[in-house]
Length: 338
Ligand code: NAD
Ligand code: UD1
Image (cartoon, rainbow, N blue to C red; front, side, top):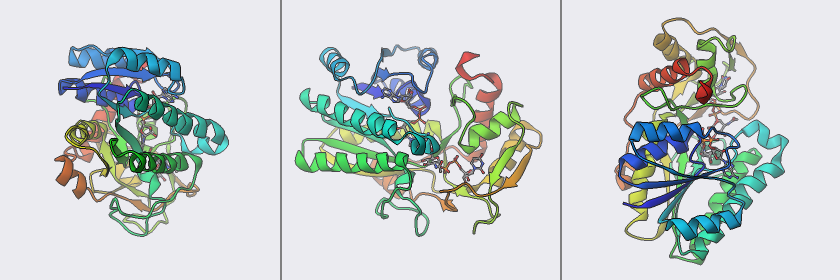
């Protein structure tokens, strides 16, 4: 059992991962500046697991604070979620994104090296595949980025790869997430986006709960089953478990490994709206609008590598994802402030 520093651990994926880590017997130390999250998520994590989390409020760019943490906490592994993730915003304030995501990560890696902690799991994204030439997407597909957010993920993958080639005692796992949705089955831990959500699922649940009027479906003229965009939605709890599985990869040997974390199955926007309508028991209003610039038609993963090498596969289906997302949204319409 290991002592794990979880950066960004109060956020959406981080908090769910803390639950799975604690339930697997690991000790969890969280560092988060709360820029996009609520510290109350950790109280829920503690309640759900009956275990304690050590929390540091601060920034991954603060080298002094990082040193204090490594000095005091005897960290074995780092799971690095901390970062800014809004695609649209990243085009408006690119320097913030490069500073936060890239400088922040480089700072973290330097302090890790100083303390001889060279085991890191990094949150990458399917966004690094750009506009894939075909599906399903394997880990060997060519990489590209179309916006500053995506570029930070791509650059960080390259930085981590350079680091590994310079010093083979590093042990690095790059996890490329597809589209995480859903919430903890308790309905007490979930995604709590600030302002109007950019992503489909939180938008749909906020329409369902009456906070927003209708879903705008971005285009119905793609070459897909019903003309709307197709994505590989993955339950956030499955995704969280993928990190626990990836830890096993850090343990015995050094290396650099890359895994897609998805389900391997694509759903269209209309299929998601239909499933969520069934979950809530009434039709969710929507209208078709223009395509969103930068969107692609279809994106889903080939997931054999994670299954083969990590012994991990996503098990929760789309109904469970929608049921759990809805339980969280309807129990806590104002997120963690409820
Ligand atoms: P999130 O915003 O809920 O969590 C990120 C956390 O990092 C937040 O709690 C935020 O306060 C914190 N943070 C940001 N900058 C920080 C800094 N400089 N110092 C300390 N803390 C900082 O997002 P999430 O959905 O949980 O995503 C986690 C990671 O996974 C991110 O790196 C994101 O880019 C990546 N990712 C997310 C998705 C997705 O759809 N949610 C998809 C692919 C990849
Ligand atoms: C977005 C990001 C991507 C990131 C991923 C996971 C963009 C352009 N891309 O991808 O970089 O890795 O989230 O966080 O933002 N849709 C609607 N109406 C809405 C919202 C979305 O029709 O109000 C459609 C989109 O066109 C898409 C699907 O729903 O077909 C999913 O959208 P979204 O949840 O934003 O995720 P991605 O676009 O896959």
